[in-house]
Length: 177
Image (cartoon, rainbow, N blue to C red; front, side, top):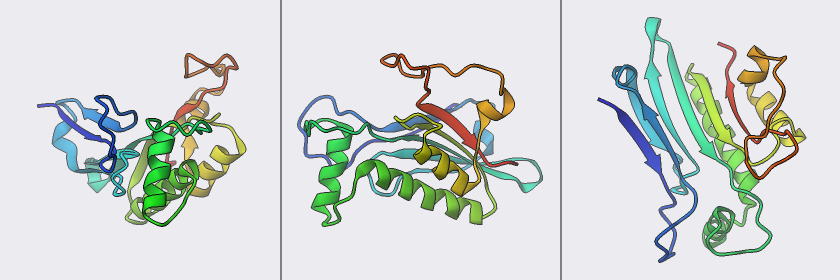
């Protein structure tokens, strides 16, 4: 039995057949028996989904997959950035969606870590993963960029087919354990 969890923007008023954004995760049938809980970003914006797995000796690991919107200066109504920006304004709490994503995810991860969980977080950060912003964010949480840590000699490669700068914008970070 496979298992999946997905999240999309629940607040949109768009009538379009296609709505950009959202996240999803899948477990193989071998891993599914370890599933304890699953869920999504409580804002209802579909910014991240998560699964909590129980391992040997009571070790729990929360796996999170997230999508941080691309900064959008065009204010086109269908972009993920514009969807989230409209949501925050409608709530009377104007926020910059990219920073709100990092702040809210950091709060969520800290809560999980305070409960003693190991963390694996995979993000489409839509920003160079070694930028000042992303480095500060991961360091504040004590997260390790797994690929760079385990394979420091591998060259960086673009993770977006539009890029040509050899700067990955997607990564997986983990707690040291």
